Image 1 (cartoon, rainbow, N blue to C red):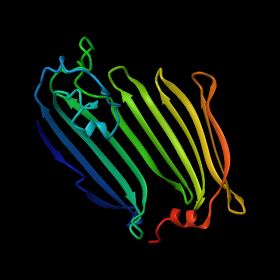
Image 2: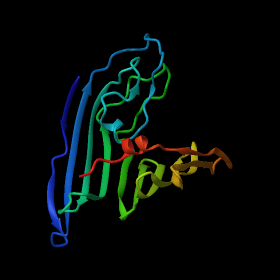
Image 3: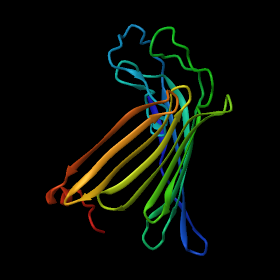
Length: 231
C-alpha cells in the first residue's frame, strides 16, 4: 500500500476591505493498493461503503475487514471559508471534491458483482453557513456527471435562539431510495420541563416514517453539564 496526502494548506485573502477573511484549503490524496484475490475469504460483516466526503479520502471502499479494495486513485478537493477577522467565527464554508481512478476495479464484495469501469467518481459538494444570528443552513449534493443527474441532495436548517432551545428542519433525497422531510425540536415548557418531538415523513412512500413527542424535566445539574464552555 502506498498513500500520499497533502492536507489543508491555507491561502488567506481579505474580502470587502478586510470585513471578511477568505481561505482556500486544497487537499490531495493519492492511494495505491495492489490487487489481491479475496474470493475465497468468507463475508461476515462487510458491505460497500457509502460515497461521501470522508469516504473518498479513506483507504478502503468497503466497511468491514473481509474485503480490502485494490486502488490506484487520486482524490482532489478544496474547501473555502469566509471568516470574521475579529472573532474568527466561520460564516460560510463551501467544499467540492472528486476521486479519479487510474485503473479498473478488480476486488468486489461478492463474486460476479459488477466492477467499476468509469474513471471518476460522482462530484461531492457542500455549502454551509450562518444565515442569521440564530439560524444556520447546510446543503450537500452528489452529482453523477456520467448521466448528468443528481444522485443525492440534502438541505437542513437549524434555529437555536438559546441553550436547550432548538428547531431543526431538513429535506433528504436519494434517487430511487428515499425522499423525506424531517422536523425535530426541543423547547422549554416552563418549570424545568422541556418538550421534545420529531416528525419524519416519506414523500416517496406517502407515509409517516417516525413521529414522536414527549416532555422531559431537566434538573439543574443536567443543564449545567449541557452548557457550552464560555470563550
